[in-house]
Image: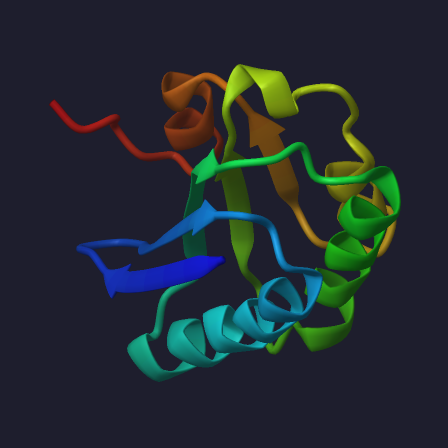
Length: 121
């Protein structure tokens, strides 16, 4: 799995692509919060539309839990996925149940709206 991060005007943009790797995903969660803290950002857009395989329910649960355990401050996260990944909201539910505002969606406008941002273009 490949992860790229870029601080944009008001948010951290993260791209996840390739075959899903749970360990890389957990490390990326920590890196996301480190980048937010160092850049003074509180909004994150994860573009995971490039993941090649459906992420399993247990892996989604663990990622949601990682968001809650690794969070270092108030951060709002939108995860944009391919429509084929919208089989369950386990990651979203796991994070939200632990106090982290997360949205998973296949609709870019919805992801940006959740963050209070205008979609690009």
